[in-house]
Amino acid sequence: MLKTNFSDFAESISIRIGMLFSRIPLTPNQWTVLSILPAIIGFYFLFEKQMAAAIVLFAFSTLIDGIDGGVARVTGAVSSLGAYLDGIVDRIVEALLLFGLMFSGFVSDYYNIPSYAWLALLLFAGTVFTSYARAYADHRKALTDEKKLKKMGGLLERPERLILVFAGMAAWFYQPEYLTYAIVAAALLSCVTVLQRVLFVVRNAE
Image (cartoon, rainbow, N blue to C red; front, side, top):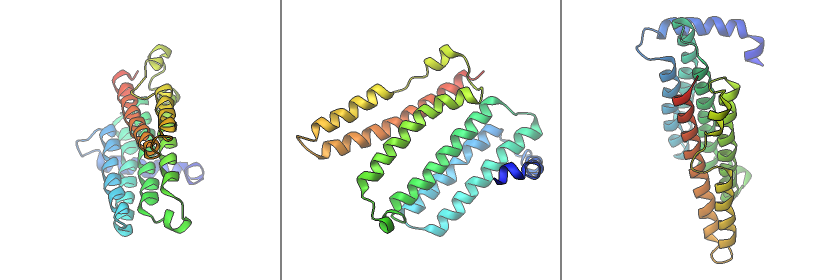
């Protein structure tokens, strides 16, 4: 709502920010990626139940995220790849924030949600993000060649992910913990797959 209704104001602020920070020798895409760093540290502080420090770090991450677009406009470096990376990084930062709140216990203790529910949600997020990394590349016109899009594979695509989860389900009859291991492995490998797809777009951007 704010972005839509106050777009002109936001644009003017973005330009002013770009003029200020364009003096620093960093490209817009470097600013975009840099915003992940305070979010990772903020995730750690959430895990340690340091809410005040986490708020500051995630706010700092948001500030850095606002710099990349302004710098791109001022320096004439606006690109489809930049828009793609910005959207991907935004989702990563939001995931770090939300999962940090979940795993810290700030949310789960209050609602008494068991840990296996968070594991399933983590796997679901990795599943969605894997598809998002491909679809968003086409949406932002960073990669529109259908042949290249089809080649955007990765370590754990849907068939491999399902096989791993089904194997864990079958192993549950032998040892219940194996299902947990399978879900954790699938979640982590999904994250690796997302990274592979993002790097594929960066290398093949049009």
